[in-house]
Length: 120
Ligand SMILES: [Mg+2]
Image (cartoon, rainbow, N blue to C red; front, side, top):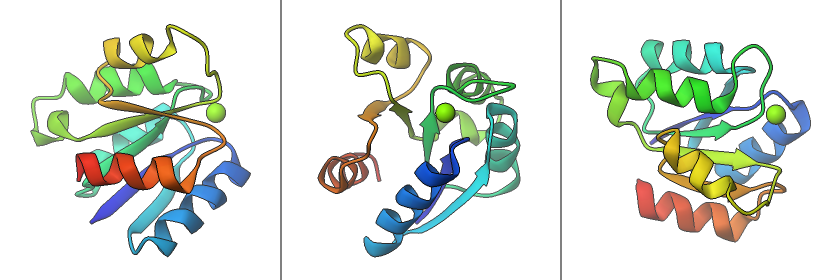
């Protein structure tokens, strides 16, 4: 299983990488914005994407829409939103963009493990 972490904050990248490695997953934090996330899933056969909603250049919502609109198999990739805003309506915004599920930051290992078990 290979997981893409699309996240512009380096500390958050490291936290997610460490958690995923501890759980035995291969993970890459090679996408610092939505454009790089779209390119990464085209270039590499990922099994799931953790997608930060707020990123420069292209945000996670737009990147998700692009992936969902793709004509290739990547459109079916599980995409889990990462967001710092634990505000009401946030989940709907993520789901409307085509994301499958939602994790609030700071990441909790338990919540992350539950989501991965559900979608992988
Ligand atoms: Mg961000």
